[in-house]
Amino acid sequence: MLKDTGVSDLSFLVLVWFSEIVLSHPSSEQIRIVIDCKKRIEELTGKILDSIDESKSDEMGRDRQALLIKKCVAGIVTEVSTIAGFCGKNEREFVSKMTRDIYLVTEYSELSSLLEDWCILMAGITPDFTKTPFRFISSELTTQWGKIGENIKALVGR
Image 1 (spheres, rainbow, N blue to C red):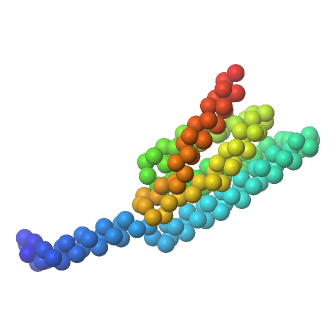
Image 2 (image 1 turned 90 degrees about the vertical axis):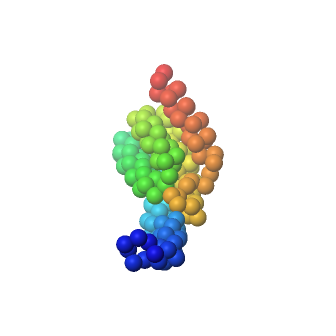
Image 3 (image 1 turned 120 degrees about the horizontal axis):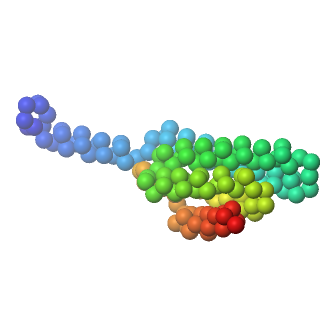
């Protein structure tokens, strides 16, 4: 018996074991939230890519398209940040670093190719639901972002 609790040692061990199982497995609600965020990211990255393509032929609508792109980037950052909230420290730090850099791109229309690369990277983020906290599956994610981030800083810093 555990001292002064009335709970047997075996009952306590079963309770601890059960708690660890529950805490180590994501709830269906967490998974649903992340999947919904992922769908919105895919929709928003599609809008950005379409808008970039349109802006190449529509000189008059560039301001309108730039605003749309900024709104979509803000939406994507929100969704990725929500996903990162269910993830580990490395994923949260990655998202924090990436969001600081990507806002620079929205200010420079000549960086649209980097924005396209970023959209592809964001649409490709895939959480691993078998681990808690969640992790991003692609080990290349930080390497890919590192290259994009370096290009952004080089072009903006010139």
